[in-house]
Length: 373
Image (cartoon, rainbow, N blue to C red; front, side, top):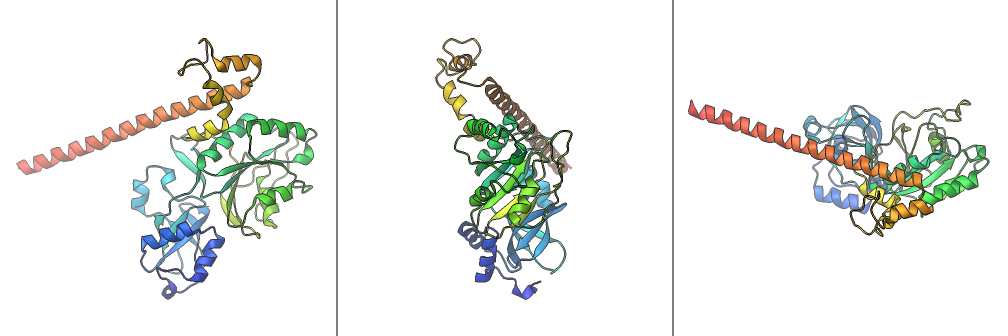
């Protein structure tokens, strides 16, 4: 541990060098210098979840538990206002041991979000990510409609997606399935791989650029933790075998963790997601379903509902087979989901505003009463 006398607002060259191994960039350095933070403050990156706080690694290479101050937590509009895996923070250190308070959250360059299960708010999957590795199995678990959702989430975040098709050694028709995946993800790297035979490992490693941050996402049991162990070169994550009754892997990862790889890249592992609700992902959906939206632009009417309107390009494409009916149904489903979510958020915002003005009016009435005494 470093002594408190070593703590200052300026970063030494060695501290900046170490932070760079965690993904620190000149943009972060500029933000740090503009902040003019007092002595006893340090930059740190969130490397794990430790409720009610987060595990961070600071400029000295020390791992600490960091806590969000009560006022910050109280004023947060939702989970996405709070630190998450991959975030860059400024922490205040007065004691060498014990939890430290978080004083600043650096702006995020990318942020993978999903709808929190059972709640009308966002849950952050990972922040400040360059590429999202979407992992799914080349067996009965392969689901093109689910893949479209993952693609929308990654594109919406500002990161680039890559699709990693695991357990290729157990699939007899891998080439045909890869073609199906490629049809819904033009321009996206698609790599079939096997952690047992190491096929595809070199192609995956080639995507891991030094200094870049990569996140592994996907459903439970598709081989994410096995992939992380392979890329890390050691058993950093617990893994489970395949269940014979349904060909699915056993769920093992329970929290998000950030790892430094030997080539200088950074990898985040995440728990398997049983469901992936979209959160404000309109742009991501437009990218994933760009072909459908381009067809819709050829409809005679700009407000065409694609039912019984004349010269409907969507309906014509469906009838001719140029547009896959299941893919179009998926597009309609996610579009309705996002529209419903937007209405709920608007309603919630209106309710919050009404409560705010009620509180103001109540305070004013109370003040008038006190003045009249």
